[in-house]
Length: 486
Image 1 (tube, rainbow, N blue to C red):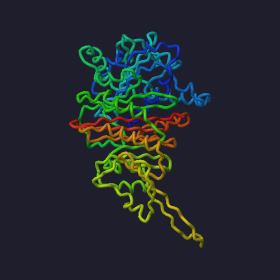
Image 2: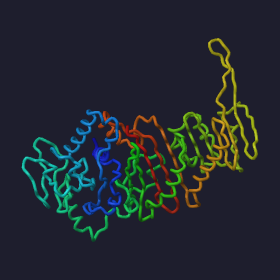
Image 3: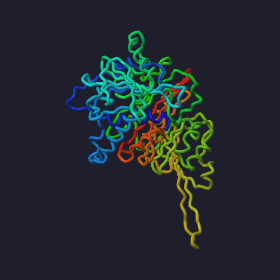
Image 4: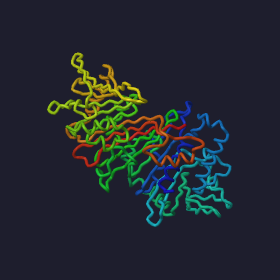
């Protein structure tokens, strides 16, 4: 297994098993420290490939899960937790992690050109009365502070090779002794140096779990060619749990180009407030449609896109919901789109009715066919068109006036994000309650395999927004994934 996958499994396992639980109603929320003010940040060396920061202070997602009343599932959770810790080289013995861990954690990975896998550094705070002995339970007792101790377990492989306890009760463990020294040096120089992601974290200070990486995962609109091979972009992903849904939000950030978390507010807040029940909702330019979205449309819809090419820069809005589909685009008075000219509608009958300023049309066709020596009438699927308020709508169902108004408002709201300097704006929202796999986050499939007999993680919704303006080299790119935990 690639270490990249192992790191994701490790992080999410910690989140799932120890991190996500609603705060107690009796707890004073004001006591929770903003993540940007955590003392643990001083122990993070620079030049990491991946950095996960958490100050979640509660344990155990499984308390509210009906499956967890099953003693077998409880045992399986414990087995997975102990297996992960054992792989790292940690042996809690009779101790409980919640009695040792003191609400601050970082996990970071670093490039190692001499090894096939990256090195890992884990720092977490323990309670003052706890020691390294409570974590390792080695035959020979260890009660040392500020001394790097090797982790040696006979006949066992442990990924963490060295461990260190600071005088302020932080445990620093790593696969490489040099990283522990770098972590210590980083804490000594912390006042003179700024935190590596100080700008990025300022807008996320109220989050409890943040993952910083240098690369985006799979994306619908994201084209690697528009990004320079070397840049200062950071991808920040936040993790949250709401009603048994794991919500991941990822932001492409670049402080030197003023692409911070606040640059996303106007896109995200308004978009999320206008969600509907459509399974697929897409706004983009026609030139991008087929290239990126072919997996989400059927052959009939695809034929419309291929024929509808009078203006490649024209915006199009598509909505799919079960068997219903609808296209919306602005009418082009100079080169008016003629729906009757489409090959798919050849020989269809057209009937038009005008209501106020709106023009409704239906394209229908009946044919005769022979089946089992009998002649039967076959009615082909009707296509509907509406011209209203500067827009043209094409669908396989008759649109009522209320839906017409709602879609028109959504179209122009989405278009409003494109000013004179914006040459790219696209938004896609995909919902599918029948997802059997985790799409766009394939690393979760390994986690699913690990916990398949206890919990199942599956996609429920995926939202992506991309916007790029002149003179920026890189775009604003936001993704939000809702994963159902069952």
